[in-house]
Length: 398
Image: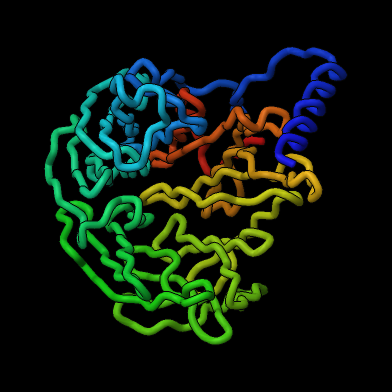
């Protein structure tokens, strides 16, 4: 059946190429004003999209350090005569690479690397005071803008960045770690500058059903799932859960369903995905809604610390559906969008080159971030890093 499916896909792709007239190749990325501020190929810094025999691209993290600097980080497996013919394995020796670029020009300011285990990808966070936080392997590193180590600490309970899933608050002042146990998880909220534990608690994990508890956090609020039947809930640190009522939104779920929810912009603004994406405050007031075409969806947003803006990647389902051939649509990046909470609408749109059903082996993924002052958008695609200038809230782009 697998061979038949592959044969059909190849025949369909050949027919498509033969029947469609050649046309000029469109730019991979186009902004509303036509061009990015700058664009660089990060392969010049040692990044390789596909290490050794890998079939998926190597993940690269990108984050603004401050308004004038943008950082990138990735983990490259070591290559030896014994392993050069094999795909890299989880945990084998590797190098963690970090590069700081001038956000106005794209010129390299500093570059460092450290020993690290291969996979999962490094977590990179730019912090409000111009420092960099990198989680890789089993350690947290706080770095200066020149990539000197300010503070380093091992993760609790011998955890790794992969299984502790570090998350940064919208303000970028606190970091949440989720430490798994057999039937529970222990959560710790850390100060990103000192690594001191600000709050900690334990949540029971479901057996057979999807777990309840925390889904997202800000510096003062937790949003998650509680009750029977399960409902979307809210609480402050140290207090009990209570259902959150959003005007016009049914927030109840069954035991095998969860509503995706994130904090965006301010400390008390939520984005809730339920067919349409509802942007509301913790009091339940709807600010605006994002309605997408059928087959389109929103990926987790990134926010701008201190400003009322957030960016999302809009994905869409592409490909054919054929149960006999075991063929189904897959997710593909489609657009990058920046929303103003103040103006309650999108102020910037960027078309992306997503993975095509005709060449599904040629994967295209994108990673983005917004500068702290909300004036710039960083976009990484394939091996290219680009910076786009964002309009003011009073000016929209289409």
